[in-house]
Structure formats: structure tokens, C-alpha cells
Length: 182
Image (cartoon, rainbow, N blue to C red; front, side, top):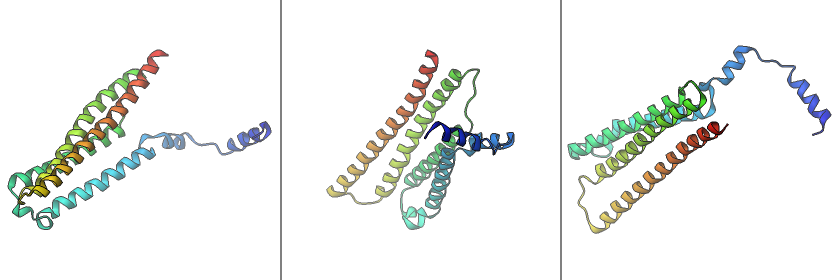
């Protein structure tokens, strides 16, 4: 693009000025596309887990399972939903400190807490699903291998979630260090 074209484009873009209210609406956090994706994910997960909790006793013979398996499944699902809600609320209302470094530091602390709860709730929910389904079946060597594979998959997924959270928190820490250098 040549300089004359750039100048022309610049002049044309200035012909449609935005009002202050339009600019404020565009920059509000609630309008951020990532927040919309998080909200959509939250709604889908809440609906699916609610449907699971409503129908698991009939479809998956929850009545025939031991009480502890039913309680563990419901507890795991509720913890999973609470984690999603907590993550959404943290993202929706960023923390504000006296400086940007203080804000990033507060957000890192909140993210560390959320990451621990997220990994814990995911592991509990995964384990509760596995335990629910195996609680009333007769185990054979083949079934032990299958359960072992499911357990290994849960461990790998938990580790991947831990790595994902660690990278997010490290990103905040790196940003904080960069601002401290300035």
C-alpha cells in the first residue's frame, strides 16, 4: 500500500466517528469474544450436567448403584459446575489494583486458586464417573484393564489441565516481570 492510499484510507475512516457511548460499549469486558465463548461453554456444560443428573438414575440404573456412588457422582458434577461459574465470574470482573503490576499480581493469585480448584473438581468428577459405572459390576481381568485405561486417561487429562493452567499463570507472571522492568 502506498502512502497516498494510506492517507486516503485514514481520511475515510475518520468520516464515521463513534460516540463516547459507542466506544464504551465496544470496550466493555462483557462484550469480549472470549468471554462469550466461556459463557457459551458454561451454559452447555450446565445444561448437559443437569440433564445427566436428572436422568442418570433411570438411564444408568442409579437406583441399583450404592448410595456412595450416587452421592459421589452428584458431588463431582456440582463441583464441576461451581468451578465453571467461578472461572466465568473471575474472567467477567477483572481485579483492579493501584497499579497494573498489582492488578496482575492479584489476578495471578486468583488464577492459582482457581487452577487448584479446577484440577481438583475435574479429577473428582472424572473419578466419580468411573466409580459410579464400576460400582455394581463384577470385575474380570479384562474389565480391570479397561478401568486401568480409564484411570490412566484421567491422570493424563489431569496432568494436561495442570500444564495448561501452569502456562496461563506463567504468562501472567511473565507479563508482570516485563512491566516491572519498564
